[in-house]
Length: 369
Length: 270
Ligand SMILES: Nc1ncnc2c1ncn2[C@@H]1O[C@H](COP(=O)(O)OP(=O)(O)OP(=O)(O)O)[C@@H](O)[C@H]1O
Ligand SMILES: [Mg+2]
Image 1: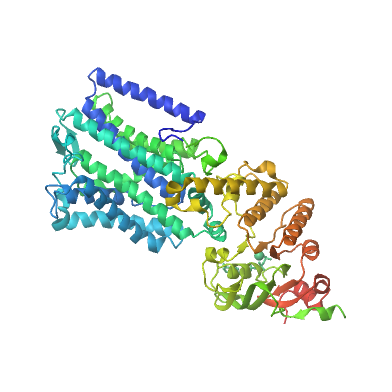
Image 2: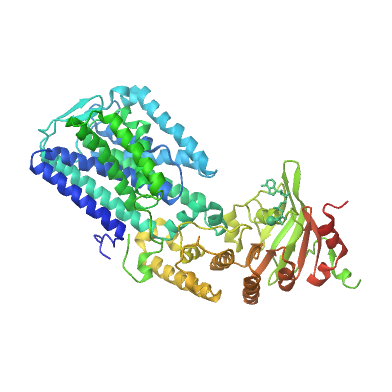
C-alpha cells in the first residue's frame, strides 16, 4: 500500500472529482486573467482546508459514532486561542512561544475540554451531550469575551506570527500586511504570495495527514464498533464493547481535529477574537457534514469545501454588483436552499459512506478509502 | 401424578456447574414489581427454557442478568464471577451473550460486517495497533472473515454475506443474530423469543442449528412462547409467573402441570 494512494472511486465520486476539476480550472483562469489575486485564491484554499478539517472532526463524532456536538466553534476557538495566547505579541499571558510548540497548547486545551464535557455526558443518552455542548459553546465564548486579563477580551489577539515565522529559511520571507474590518480580514493584495503559498502547503499537509489517519482508523475494527454504536449502542454493549471508551476516543479525536483547524486559522489570518467562536460556525460545519454525506470522510471534505464556496462565492457575486441583494442574506438563502435540497432529494448527502468497515488488506484487494 | 412430582415447586437450585446463577433478583418500575425474588440457575451444557405468560417478567430477567437493568436486590454470577451491577459489556466479556426480543438491525452495515463486530478484544479495536501492528490486525481480520463466512454457510445464508443487514426477512435476521452471537464465542447464549414471527419451516431449521451448537458445548437460555419449539429443544424448562419462578422441570411434566396451566389461563392468580 502506498501512502499516496487515494483509493478507488465510485461513479458518484468521479462526478464530484470532475466538477471540482472544472471549478479548479475556472479559478486558475480567473487568476491568470487577473480577475482574482493569487494571494486571495491561496487564502481561499486555506479557508477551505480549514472547513474540511472542521467537517472531518465533526464527522468522527457524529458520522462515526452518532454523537451530537454543538460545540464545534468552541473546539475550533480553543485551538485558535490556545496557539494565539502562546505565540502572539499581543497576548496578555505569554506570547513569543514557537508556533510548533504552541500547536500542542491549542490541542491540549481542546482535549481537556473534550474529556470534561464527554466524561459526564457520554455515559448517558445521546441527547445529554447535545444539550451540554450547546451550553458549552456559549460558556467558552463568553469566558473569552469577559476574562480579558487572560484573553484580551473583545479586542481580540493581534500580533500572531506566521506558522513558519521562526523557521530558518521560511521565516525570513516577507511579513504580510493584513487589514481588518469588523473582525473579518480584508486582504491587502500586496501580501506576499510566497507566504500564502507556504500556508497552503502547511494546511495541505495537515489535511492529507488527517485524512490518511482517519481512513485507517475508520476502516478498521475500531471504526466498525463505532458504526455499531451509532445505530445501536445496546447491541455494541451486548457484544462486549466498552461503548463509553469508544465514544470518548472518537469524541476526543474529533475535537482535536477541530482544534487543529483553529490553530491553522490563527496562523492564517493572524488575528483571533471572540467573533470567531460564534455559533454560526458550528451551524455551517453541521450543514457541511450532512451535505457531504454523514459518515464519509470524503463527503465531509466535500461539504467543508462547499460551505466555503458558498461563503466566498456570495461575497464575490455581490462584489461584482450583478445582484440586487447583499452577500449575507444571499448566503443564508443559499444555505437554506441547500438544506431543503438535502432533505428533499438526498437525505444521505452527496457522498454517503459506501464501503464496509473491514480492514481493506484483509479483503484481498487493495486499500480502499 | 408421577409426572407432577418431577416438577419442582420454584426453581431448582444448587446445580453442579451453573454458567449463570441469579439469586433473589428484584426489579420495580415505580409501583410495578416486574421481578420479585427471582432465582434461576442455568446448568452448563443444557438448553434451558424460560417460559411464562405475557408480562411475567422474562425479558426483564434477561435485562437484569445481562446488566441492562440494575437490580433493586439480588445477585448474579456468570462462570462463578460475581457480575452484579456490572456494565453489560463486562458481563458479555465473562462469556454470556444475549439477543433482544426485537431484532437489532445495524443500519448501513452488510451482514458480514455486522458479524465481524462479534469477536471479543480484537487488536484492531484499539487505535495504536492500527498503526504499530497492522499485520496482526490484518491476520485477525482475515480469520474473523473466514469464521463469519463459515458461520453464515452453516446457517445456510452464506449468500447474504455482502447484503445490507437491514434488507433481511425476520427469520434471516434471527439467524444473523445467532451467528453474530456465536462470533463472540460465548459459553452461554441468551435468546429472547428466537422464533417470534419466523415461519415454521425456518423455525424448525433454527431449532436444528441450536441443537447442533449445543452439542458442540454452547449452553442456551431461551425465552419462547412457541410451545412446540421450546418443548422440543429445552430441558429443563423454567416457568416464570408474576416476576418469580413458579416451577421448574422437564418439558412434558411442566406442560401438564396444573400450576402452569393455571398461570397461562387464569392470568393473575390469588
Ligand atoms: N422499562 C420498563 N419500564 C416500566 N415497566 C416495564 C419496563 N420493562 C418491563 N416493564 C413491565 O414489567 C413487566 C414484565 O415485562 P417483561 O417485558 O419482562 O415481560 P415478558 O415476560 O418478557 O413478556 P412478553 O412475553 O410479552 O415479552 C410488564 O408488566 C412490563 O410492562
Ligand atoms: Mg419479553
